[in-house]
Length: 231
Image (cartoon, rainbow, N blue to C red):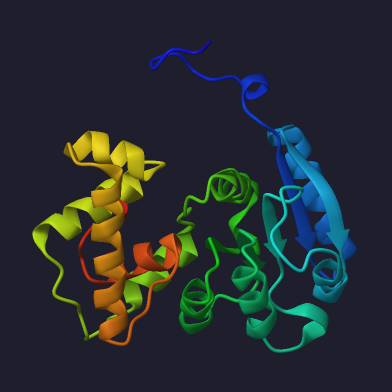
């Protein structure tokens, strides 16, 4: 068994069941090859050229699928925000993987519940890291997503208490509310209460943050934490 200070090998980590939805076969082949070479734990249990093929089979989140890699623009049409919202609302952990670089598109995807947003030109390393992070419901900050968050200057900010801010930062830096509780010497139920209050305050000023990724985006926008705090 690995100790706290010993590295965990890929064999000791659980497999990650991934699905890709993209209308280009070459993207499927490339992503499969990248993952096989970089992290054999990532197993593709489905490849779909159109989101309807996936949603017809998985209307709700399933233990068979840990991560959905989703091309936002299918068949050259406008961004499929409605499909993304449907996937996220069903409980799927979605990594948006698109060539679109516009800030407003990236921010809209995070608003709708995407775990992270990657531009296809950002390469293999970021995609692998994003899939690994998404499998544990942890946001991954790619370069273009980070820039979009920094460029977003929201004017309406909630009046979060110092304790609520402290809990937010600790939550983004750990994997669970239990770990946050241990770090701050409070009960996990208290951690949940602080997070619920933070979300309620954001919703009250018209900036809802229903997911961890959305809440992270809000915190960065408002200067509660910086990108360096996530390293």
